[in-house]
Image (cartoon, rainbow, N blue to C red; front, side, top):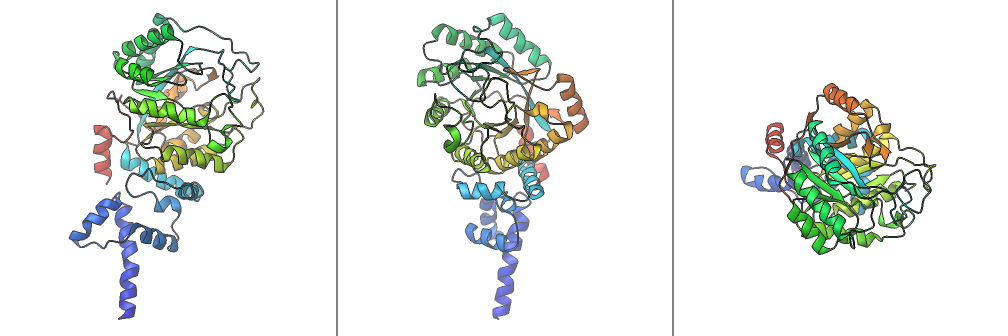
Length: 402
């Protein structure tokens, strides 16, 4: 009798793993009890899966959307064997998105250089001796023409960046930017801005103008942050993110790897993002492009394995967020970028520049899309403060694949 009971207990975790692996959430698995399926407490399932030799990536690749991740859990996912991490991230990606859709975004520096911040990686800081010269806000016709050309080239999101610490005190420039946002939104494109710190009234004004998303990266972990930036605190960045979300604007927030940080710092960054009240709609993963004249000019380039590990972990812990393969992509070959897409990246920045640093050639990106069978992701024009929605195409694909 004891042997029979033991066999039944051993059979249960295998049954749970089988159905969870087909995309069945923990909640759905629990509800299936009425149909004769066994139910086990989540922690018990995890313990049994660990005993069966499953990696943390495999264990955490199924289940409900979470904002209560622990740093230890995310560290264990990040440390999973590379191929297992990649496979499970790809599984999560396919359960939430059409894996062939990649959004093309265009980033334009509408106000370059002369920034008072001291970000160690940035050539636009007035504190660093770089070749970037300060300029005034670009005129309306130049910005709108760039947006039209971006749309013709296939971009569905147009991002505008201004080298400021904050918007406050720039009333005329801010009014012009609100006009740019409204006009570009009228072209049928998503519109994103990164303008530094915002107050509540500025966030509401951007929302009313039609802004889709606000980019405000955390850059790195809280612990390493002061080694990179001293002119703006970590909490000030989080406050700006909160203001954008409260105004009903989608949040775009990620970070940069290759700043000299440890793997623990990378996990710390992901932990902060994954435990926000709502996951960012977009999570840019940037690899440092070291620029001469900045304090980080001699940093070694990031290897693709580090980029894939970061993207894979982000995809598992923030399954419904867009993960954006951003700065540094120019250093990766087409096969290396393919690994990033397989891991869960579903957005790139196109155009010959990323604010002030080089980017991939447009024709190279066209060839890559053709070679990999990628298709442009259509714009999502509704505004949201949470990245937990899916397009009709994504939902249809998820249903089909499950």
